[in-house]
Image (cartoon, rainbow, N blue to C red; front, side, top):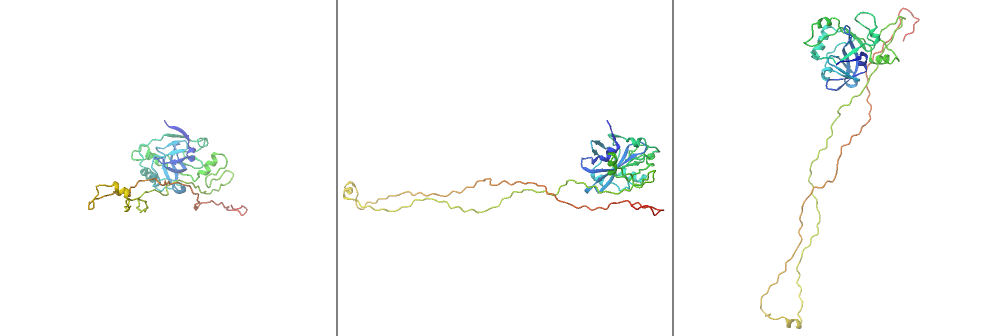
Length: 310
């Protein structure tokens, strides 16, 4: 079941690809002049969001502030370069839909135009407000487009130059920055300028691994050992002792033996844990400098010398 959202909520959304990988913020929204539904968005991506691509909203889902598109990040980054600030020709639209390979993807979210859009006077080309561009009727996309596709293509896509920052300020009713060159009934003109939007994304910077290997060394240990030795001791026999010794004749051959003992060293080895090694991470704060050209409008007067230049 489709759920209704305000079109301007798209400008506060963070875009993700079909696999859930973060792309960036939504820069502009392109509205179908006939159906009143958004057809395309311009999505920032790349380092610090400095690049952008036009992406069809066909097949997207929108939950909370998470806008899930129906395409992978690589396909979005490789989208054809189309000038979103100018009229989209039929060939441009065909090129976009052919690149994204759209066939039978269905939107899960319907949108309601805000009140000032719904009450705007005029024909199909409505004033969409800051960050929202008035689009043509749109196309169904892909080889399976319906019979109305050729009719819708003739309306084209028209993008305003309004930026997301001005739209958010207008929604909060604090500060309004209309499109460049917008002149009021009182003859006033609004001057606009580009501002840098910088964000950060986390990426892999390297991999550290622990590897264990074996080396061989030599150890020398002195071990005390004992052994028995024989010494000859001669003791004279007294006359009293000689009387007690009988059956002894000169010339009798006799032998006596003693068994000697000694200690021998046996060597064996065992594995013993001696150290534990851990990998610890710490976060280091650093600063990177980003330089980018920005456009600033200047207003000068013609026909009189009494007006100050801005």
